[in-house]
Image (tube, rainbow, N blue to C red; front, side):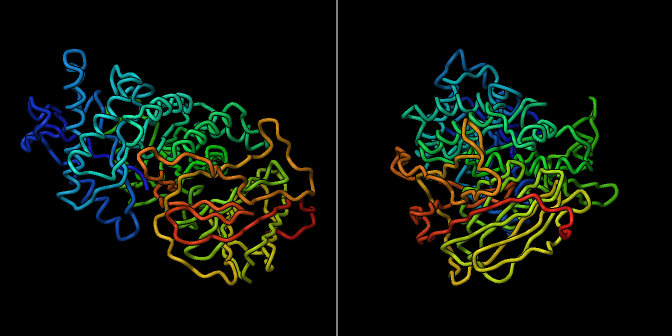
Length: 527
């Protein structure tokens, strides 16, 4: 569901932006040393109004920034390292206790850092060893205080490679490992393969995903599967295209597809959930301002002066998943016989539906034919199409049968289909827990070949990592699916195996999807 920022809080009671240590004893909390203005605003103006609409699975943080919110702490690192760790642990505990005791909310996850040793360098002078020690010390402090379920989102470094390195070191440490709840990464720096939309369109958008980027995502996927924790693509911005350029929508849709397929990402975030003109002016006061409408990757923009709320291109792309997939949905791996047509598919146990998202990167129409075996399709469907002409337009012209969906996709478009599964009973799966992680073979990368034109491609999810280790603390890792605020737990299902996850309490059954994509004749009907 996203993160809620509550820092700073260990501050002067009259000025929240004057951080200072509450007292000289990290074993005690001095209530007079905390200023909860940021938490009050976040709860009263965002969380409480949002909860009736489903905003219930957010996490707090980042809560450890020695560059500002804990700017007094680095001096302790060299003089008394153990006390330094204890002061950080006290700080995190104070935040958790405030939210539990004041609002009755104890999120299952909390984010410790954001780009701690790279990018923003928010853990000033920090090292990988320090990060491991901090996870262990903070985790121990929370458990000693009776916070038994909360785990940490780590490490959220600037790049995928550094995030992989730091997460590996944390998870390899027996003291820290039990406290890890998710592996988070960013795809920076600006202008990188996945921050820059032109780079996305030039690679995956042309059927040739960047092999180096695919490899690091598969290693993140495998690390999460090994330790039973989900992987989060936790931030991206700077698309490098104008706000009204449809390339942003298609590019971010491709990006979402690639993170799902190659990293088996269980969450995909934009930059900010909301951003407004007043905050923007304050944020850039006294320094170069790129312009409010440069925020193409923040989900919703609020033009206060003109009383307008605008969905960004990132929001439009995310909507093709987030508007159609509920908590409890199961991603079913998808491949296509055309490298220019990208597919992801989801089984929805709660609503007994199949959801398919397709991105057509070809400059001509493509005929999409999807075949389902084992769970007959119902006679109706819902769907929406985004093109340069209009976002989220209702789809017309598609046809369904008990086994097939057929649709002619316009060039350079994104489409979502939601189709009921006939004879399947809707079930409230609840928040599931899975010790494994879906593994998808991808689409013609790492030496594999894309099926020849006219051949059917398997969308059955590929092999699951059935042998993935459960968490060493005896519990299973939560594998939660979310799209910029659309979180919820996933269950894994393998076609041919019919496997249900540990926490779902239902057999998902067999769903196999085969797709054939053909170049539509120029005389074919318009979609």
